[in-house]
Length: 434
Image: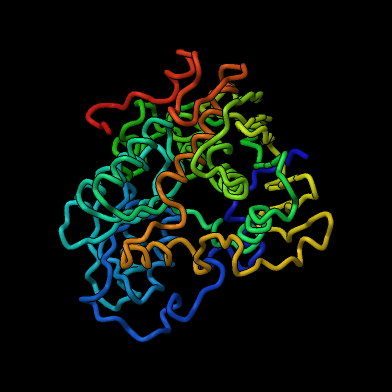
């Protein structure tokens, strides 16, 4: 069923939690430490964090959640929009009761500080990898919003994080969400038998073409820095910023990349294919026309794995379902209650010697801090994210070319298709580079 209105995942979260949009949304099971009720940690023992990108999600989820952790300290905020930067600084100073939070418009000033241990990057997709690479090379641990913009840049990030020995977390909550963790554990432990089909639904949209008329750049917005490595384009107002850049391929990959970074990861996790990917993709999509938007607004994509498992991804109501030789399990709606057939699957207990999937109930930010201390791999590390995001990217490429493609997940390239392989990377506007 195709949805008539654009759905945001954060909207689903607010509705599910029964809180107002302006409220702080803490991730899942939040302990006293996460809420700042645990004994204080001396400032000298806290992990210092700089926040790059402090728009709505950068503040509402990432900054506020980290401010609730007693073992870290926000010391700097950075944004190309002066209004966002000022708002974030005031929130930090109010939390600590001081005036010490530094502000920057250029992210390089944040990663250049020797006294910052880690950065939280909450920018549009086209900036994720360039900023992360710069931070990793500067010796910072990194949590970054998902996804990547291309397959090739994602592989560079994986290699760089490994080379510099840094902790890296793709910022997504799904592996901490009970419904998805439980679903995937049951599937991985054989409760539905051998998996043969995975069904994923993601939201459709947008439902307008986007204003193509140039608009005056607002005072306080460094628009050239916002564009960064993306091709130059005129500022077009609210149909471009702060959220609608997701519908423009120069900055993102549409709903398939945005929501796909969540539910496609669940598909990979339950399928035990999180370190590889499909070998075939065939997609059809309806693309936005007549304005600045050019991503697919409706889509249906079929993927095939080497072992014969088929994954069908289409636009509709955010959903995930696994079908196997002995039953099925899934849900319809973001974080919706699990359903299964036979129903007894839902009450099945995972034994001590069975597979227990790695999670952190307090969410990705808490997991990131714990891993900075332990130097353990986070629950959504570079390689697993790369494999997930690649599924979205090759799906978009198949839809744009209008044909079935064969994919080699080991080499991360299409088989005997030079045109498709050229679409795995993009040039970057000078002076930016990987």
